[in-house]
Image (cartoon, rainbow, N blue to C red):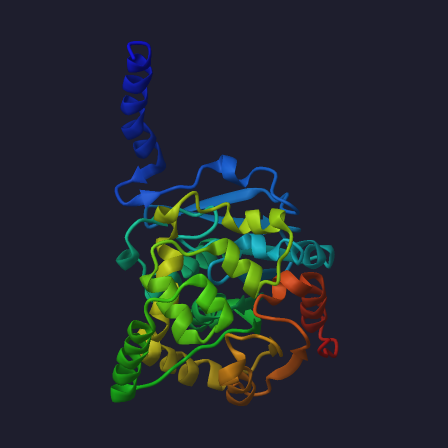
Length: 345
């Protein structure tokens, strides 16, 4: 016992030191860089920008003078999602910018769920786009990447030459309808709670997904990505779990689905002022086997509301199209940028 006491004292003293090392500021965690070493097919150089006192990570690949493409991830992913697309896009001469939103990837993570808001993500990515001075850019967004990124485009339409969306949406309403929709959405999530990950996989209805992520204590990124990304390779699954050493780092991912109806009125303004008047190329490239968006036919909303939008269908692919057919999707985007006829596959 006497021999054990020095060891116990040292370890007890180290506990607060370790905690302080993880917290780079009050309420802010930063995933250790060691967690991102040797990830499969992810050889990219990290870049960082300080925004509102937080470190935002982004990839910046390809020629500096190439026409930029902004790729924005969704929930619960990060720029790792684009690892097979980036080489195809840069080979065509494009500059690829792929940020990690706050709470995801190599970007800083706020501990409190309530610290994350929909406008906060819009403001962060908008500032990154503006400070990089991106112009004549192509935007691609999927999942929450679309909800946030389309608002970034709406706030900076002069910087974007074209838009590509897949398996995403921009839900909108006004006045009393917006007020009721937000509260009904949250009531449905509360009603479904509790939901286990296995129950969600068996029935991936959207209210169950919101209930599982918001009310759960530790979102299983591995199981979510294995299911929605159709992933069987454990090394790829490890790439998606790398940003999250434990549940404390997942607050951003846990609350993301719950925030969807919080900007319905502002989204309506984006539709009316920007996208329903859009006069640039706009590609709608949804999959036909997505359990998240297919039930509400979000593809049709974009195809009918955006003037001159082009619509194609990617067949036999689920929610994370980048994961299942990344190189093919990148080739489609290359053709769209080049003004070539595009079709589904």
